[in-house]
Image (cartoon, rainbow, N blue to C red; front, top):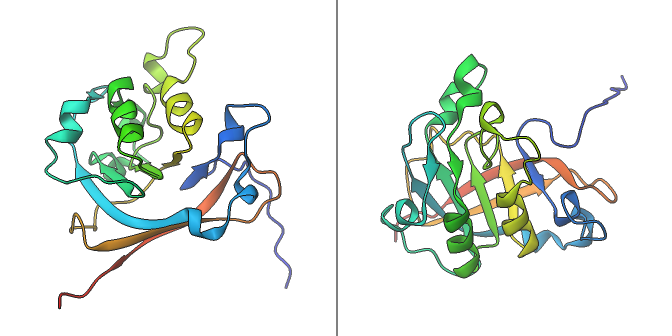
Length: 183
């Protein structure tokens, strides 16, 4: 048996590389595997459709975010996958994106279609500021995460291994959390 696949690299749960928005930027295969693994932090942030997640929302999520962390933002939108209102997702505000950069986060993942304004709310000429802030500062972006069953907020290692596609601006990724057993 031989399976043939043809798909866009930004299909399903996937990770974005800087070259996605910055010509000449690094592609996923320019990084060692260790770049895709780190201590995990789950931030629970509830927002209404088309809501914007602020710096204050992330700060009040009750988790200390440190350099090298993989921050997963659970909005509850992952449970809407496949439903028409999935595209009414909340977005990350520019102040929240800068907050993640200031803390030295290595990966930011969200349980929504995108961390940007939802497609129906984007103005003409939308410049994708969240991707530009994060990817421009070396923070990978993961979209379409399923975080519904993840209940712990820390004490885990998160890995997000992309398909090894040469020169890829993004790739489907196998993302998983390894939960540490209590001592």
